[in-house]
Length: 414
Image (cartoon, rainbow, N blue to C red; front, top):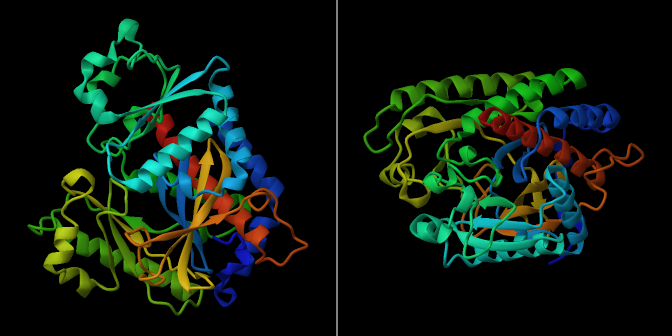
């Protein structure tokens, strides 16, 4: 797999040059602002952020606090990932030596297994003893927990800290309630409690403040969104509210398109308000397509991960992706990874069967590593505004805004 970033083409005719210049020319102001924020709101242990670049705007569309895909990162930059893990753990306690990783219950998903093996390897190379167990094993084998003095003990392994890589879609086990060891992320930030609407409300507040600092329109770095409460796509309960909010959302997006002279057609992504793996997502181009959902679409929007019922959605502004992988002409979107607030790289997600308005996080997707040696750290005004260095710095800024939103979520949960 080639590492040459020139293979990912940024379609310049759609670029908002003023937005790019405004961000890269104010690096010192931006970095100072972020340093102040991290002192107030400590970041999560790790995260991955899906970003869409339409040229006229760049914004996150999803923030995952239980990321997979570590096997898709650039292996030549392991030293960067190791350093970030060490830095994060040192800030918690220099006494940490044993880490328990609680994973999803997948037993046959080879991609997830590869991700966990890559993550465990990074933790080991960071100087920690790491053990792994599935959440289902903890839930079913309560006797094996041996919670002596409220310390989780799994088959003789007593961790100093517990890292969740299970998104708790089915809820946290009762055995977590009295465990003394720190659990990261907070057990109350799983998808059983968390909502994408809440996350993007935090993100919206943050970008409002950040945009005033940079004197830019916050819409250029944030998606519009709405939520109308409980919904059942099979019985059509709540559909009137859904249609009403979709009309409102189309209207305000079109107003922005008109303001900036954008000739593209607005679209909306309707997503499960809680959940991941690209499940429970449909795209609509107009109100009629929402009113006339077919059986297949309604079935798709009835359940999410684990067969759980989908009962709430977020209506999110669709953001076109105007980056393509040159050799194959696949539409691409960057996914940025972090340990703490330290960005460590990521990859381009691509799909040969999807267009630039569709969800790329679906079966058949492929990945192209993004090497972050310098790109996300230091923009260069001596280079063209659209250079890889400057583009990835901007992605890094957007990713950290999303991480900060998640940090505030966790802060208020705790």
